[in-house]
Image (cartoon, helix red, strand yellow):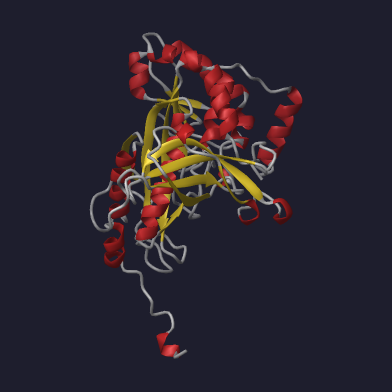
Length: 383
C-alpha cells in the first residue's frame, strides 16, 4: 500500500444521511438493546430487527451477547441474557425504531453483578404507596480524543473558575452544540429532562432527569447517558463521567439525587424530610459505598462538596452532604437534595439504597458500620 494513502479515510455524515433516508418496511423495526457492562459504568449496545413495533418491553424477547467481551462472563460459558425493561423512541434511526434498556442475567438466569436494577425495582415496589419521586442531576465533562478537556488550551489551562457556570459566549460555554442536541434527543425519546446548564468548570455541563416516580428515574438516566455518548460520538468528542476529571482548583462532577415522598410534598412535610435526613445520617458510610467509584477525590470539603468522612446538612448550602433548598425551608414541604453521589454512580444503586433507608427502614449492624467506615477512610470505596 502507498504510505501516502494511509489514514486518509474520513466518515462523511452527508453520505450516511443518504442511506438513513431510505424507506424502511413497515414490518421491520430496528430495536437497539442497551445494557451496563462489567465495569458497572460503561454502556454497550447492539441492534436487532423485529417484525412489529413494540409498545412495551414485554413485547420484546430476551436476547444474548458475549459476556466474555464485556467483563461479565468467561469464554468457556460466555452467553449473557438481555431482558428488555424499558423502551424509548430512537432519535438516530427515527420512525418506529426503538431504544431498549435491558437487565443482564447469567446463563442460569441469575442477575449479573452489575444488574442493580432488579433490587432497585423490588425496593420501589415495596415503597410504591409512598410515591417516591427522584430528580437526578447528571454532571459530565467533554473531552477531546486526547483526554484533555474540550476547548482547553493544549497543555495549558483556561481562566480560573468564575465565568463558566451558566455562562454564555465562545470562551465560556464550551461544547454547547452537543448539549442542545442531547437535550432535544432526550425529549424526542420520551426522557423527562427538566433542564440543563453549563457547570463551574469549563467544558463541564449538567442536565436533570425528573421528577420521575420509582425505577423510571434510573431507566431514563441510563438511556440519557447512552444518548449523550452517541451524540458526542458524532461530534468526535469524548464524554467523561469521572467525578474529578481535573486535579487542582476545579470542581468535580456529581449526580445529585433530589428525593421526596408524598408526605414530604404535602403541607408540613418538612418534618418527614428532617426524619429522613436522620436516617441517612445513620447510614452515611454505607451510602458512600453505593454512590460511585473514586468519589473520595471529589468529596474533599472543597469545591461545593462535604468531606467524604463527614455528614452534614444545610439550608441552601452546597458544601453539605444534604441540602435543604431555601424554598423548601420557606414553604415547610418539598424535597431534599443528596449531594454525595458521584457522576459515575449507578442510579439504580443510589435510588435503591435511598428507598431502603428512608422508606423501608433498613439499618446497618454495628459490624457493617465499622467495616464501611474503614473502607471509606482507606479510600477503598466501590473497589
